Amino acid sequence: MKKQLVSAMLVLAMSASLIGCGKKDAAEADSTTTIEPEEQVEAVDDSVAFWDQTSEDGRVHSYLTGEWVDPSYGRKRPVAVMIENTKACLPQYGIGNAGVIYECVVEGGITRMMAIFDDYSNLDQIGNIRSSRPYYVYFASEYDAIYMHAGGNPAAFELIDDKNLVDNLNALTLEGKKGSSASYRTGKTEHTLYTNSEGIDIGIQKLGYDTSLPSNYEPHFKFAPEGNALENGQDCQAIQLYYYTNKPYWIYNEDDGLYYRYEFNQKQVDALSGQQLTAKNIIIENVDWWIYEGSQYLGYVLSYNTGTGKYISNGKMVDIVWSKDGDTDVTHYYDLNTGEEIQLNVGTTWIQACQKEYTDETQYYANKSEFSKAN
Image 1 (cartoon, rainbow, N blue to C red):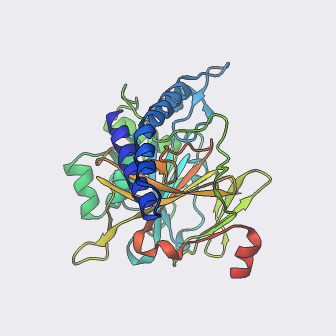
Image 2 (spheres, rainbow, N blue to C red):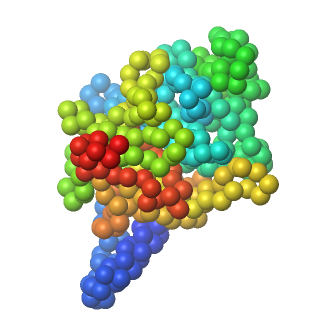
């Protein structure tokens, strides 16, 4: 609780500073700062009540999506799987079932994804699986997720092996036949390593990982029980991300209230379901970054840091500030204008980590006709 309040007060101080830059009265800024912490406490209390709810048939709210789910997996540790995202690897399998997906630029300008599942049951193929990078280890640790990857760079293994930030399933060392191993291959190239529901369970059992969540588990997000219309937000029906290799973009569908994902000039489809990938919530997280000396590997400044971004849902967009206190602490997202912690709409969330220097190259369009004209 204290960490959340400290983070909120930090963000509020930033907001007050921005107001000062706008030449508003200093007393008004001070007044705003003193009353906001009480609102933050109320938001936390509301969220606790939300997680305690149980449906008539015994279901609970998913920690990843806020949806009603079976407690047999809704109250267990999630599983995070590294997913390749090059044109050569397409199509991907099983990621449409993920509750949360992260996407970051890695070396060479390509992006890589991490799909987080609470329900990975009945998935015959997930992947393909690719190697770890340190920032994904940090992201996975925020959910206390069991983390599956295919090797990784030295900085990632420092966090996995030396700092023990996550319980990991290295698909390269657990590889074998489908049905008896945690991971398997469908061919001989690097793009052919996969897992499935049975394989994940085999890996967890082999390494003896506990799948129960700790009693003090902190859900990563807060959800709006009645929905969040972002009434004070700007219209946003299309997003063109700056990632120059896969050139991804999102298009809003008013009929179902979801954003539909495209990349490589085509729909991004989950080959297992045949359905195009969608998101209810999109979070743009602008981050400081660097390149490790003597390599092409990127690093992102996440822990003990804050930054700006966007929260996008229901055809609307608001400016946000994110804050992460420590290596395994949850990243919190706050409305830049009000200082209140963002409450997501129930559904799948994509988090797009964006290099801070390229913030202005991501384009947001109020309507789809503007996007069509620009592209």
